[in-house]
View 1: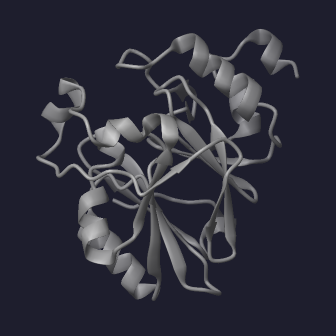
View 2: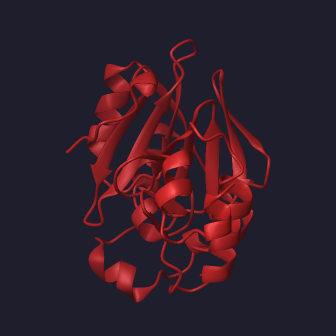
View 3: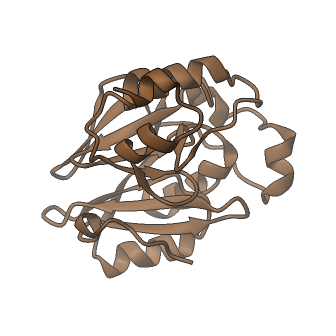
Length: 222
C-alpha cells in the first residue's frame, strides 16, 4: 500500500510502506536534475525501481536513518541494480556489517551485508540534485540515529512518530538519550514542519509538542 503524503511534497516525494514491519520507504527526487535518493529501503525494491523509472530519476543515494535491518534490508538490491552509494551516520555504520538483533532477523528475510559508502555527521548536507538534506544526529533509538531536514519537511526515521517515539530496548538504545534528542534538536524546529516518520502516519512538530505523551510538560509549554 502507498500512503498519503503532504500536498506540498507530492511533486518530489513518493512513499511505499514496505516489509513486515511496515517501514515508510521514501523516494525523493529532484525534478530539475533527475537525481534521487531512497530513504530507508525496507522492501518492495522492484516497485522502488519502477517509481524511479516512471519519474525518469537516477538513484544517487540510498540513505539509512539508522542501521536496523528493517530500514536497510533493501540496500544490497538497490545498490547492485543502480550503483547508488549507501549513506548512514558514522556511529551506525557498524550495524550494516554485523549480525542484527535476533528479534529483527527473525521477522525479515535473508539479507546480504553491504557496508556504507559514505558516513555522515551532524550538520552535514546531503545533496540530491538541488535538494539539500541537513543531517540532525538524534541518538537514542540507536547511537547513530539521524533525522533529515529539507525545507518544510523532516524525515525522522525511528526517532519520532505521531504520538510516539522509537523503542530503546534494543542494543545501543537509551530512553534518556532519545528524549533529549527529541526535545533539544527537534522540538526547537518550526512548529509547522511536517514530520515524516519511519513507521506510521505523518504529523507536525506542533502536534507532537502538544499531544506526544513522551514529551515533558515543560516542553509542551514552549
